[in-house]
Image (tube, rainbow, N blue to C red):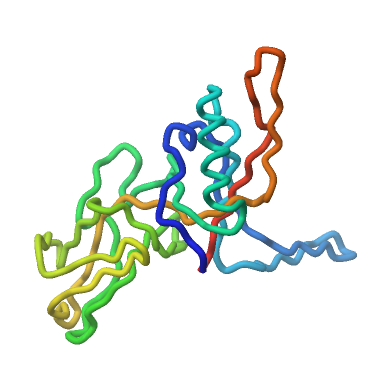
Length: 208
């Protein structure tokens, strides 16, 4: 899939709107009862970055970024300021934030993931775009300073020596969301003072 390993400007994404969406089929029966079925197993994130544009220079930066991505053709990284790390927003990242697997004695690769838990229910999100230099790894609660590497384009952690059987593999990290523009057009309005504005710049998460 066509993807550029470049991040959308942070100063603009900080003021954007958006978040996760799901698709649920709701059928109302003749009795007034409902039947609900999930069309998607996983959520998908959608953003509108027009809200982050505050200056003419911001507008120019977005247009340049759009042109360099060829509109919807190339995906790119996006920092979701509401959800960009393995730890709670108010806490620092630690190597034990998220469990990403259990050792078998032979398995050397583990996919970064983040779990969302409420009550007895948990949904696990695959993380494919960790931020370089942010990943920390622990085995059975002990941080590993060497003996592993991470592919920042896939989120896969690889160990030189496979973790032992039943060893808990955990990780902490920052991450970006892989997205693309959801339109091949940017509609810019210029007022009399030549200050530009854009009504909407939609971005859509790329699910692989």
